[in-house]
Length: 398
Image 1: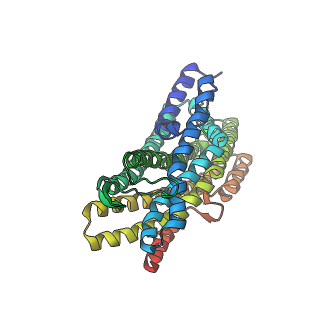
Image 2: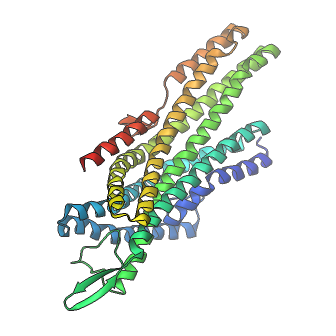
Image 3: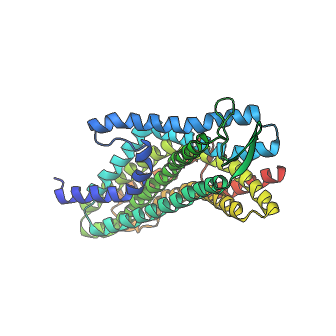
């Protein structure tokens, strides 16, 4: 029977590990409904519709502006960067909504893992990984939100002079200009309203991207923590054999069950993030190329404020790609290590039947579930290096 204290503590620990993800995703309606409530059922679709409308009001007119109004290639390149950021965030938002059932299952899986934990040392190990996952979520949120908002502020805070007919006006430029045949955002108060809508849409799409990235980090760190507990159980297998053989056999059965449970969790995480990772990595490569182009122009113009904001955006794009690739490589290495530890145990001290059963763990560890981007290429540090090299190559082409 499950101890109520363990259940309560496990729920609190799970909430602690996912707290930041909930803060990022709940305001935009992308946090899955764990417990069905009437108010949640009413307001969740409303949140999603409002968020989509705000993003669409900025994105669609900007896309039309790029396609039909902008003739100068340099101006077009300046607009494509912010537009691409919104398109990437929009796709990430849609993917999170589409995968809400899988995300909910992963959250419930994590909660069960926390609740079934009995030993204090196991809980301490898991809390270390949870804290690291939170740290990655904090850094991702600060860099991405900070970079995109600073970019928008630096662009919009200055004023430019526009002439319409015989009248001259001061207006704030937008990072995503609108198609003038739909709405002219140069005149007050439309200009101020459009600026506010632009900031709001930036927060929404950035929250979707940050939420996807941080959720991947927390899920992966939870899996790494569970694998770490598995290593500890494997190391204690021989100690159990020295007591009684049936204890070692029970321990081994528990290890196999635990291993399969962790692998099923990783497989579910892969099914969620492979689309997000593909969009993020491809989009970040193109965006890093464009931001690098902006940095070169700002260096020539000696625009220090814009140079700093562009550099922060470049770092945030590189960091997001790094997080996905780092997590993919770490998880792959941790999964392989299960087989290595099973092989390196003092198996010769075990009963021959128990020792033979270790082959199941070693064989399963050879079939590593790798995190991928769109199931096209593996997330690894080698991939991250290729992304940086590709962005530099495309920048040279510009």
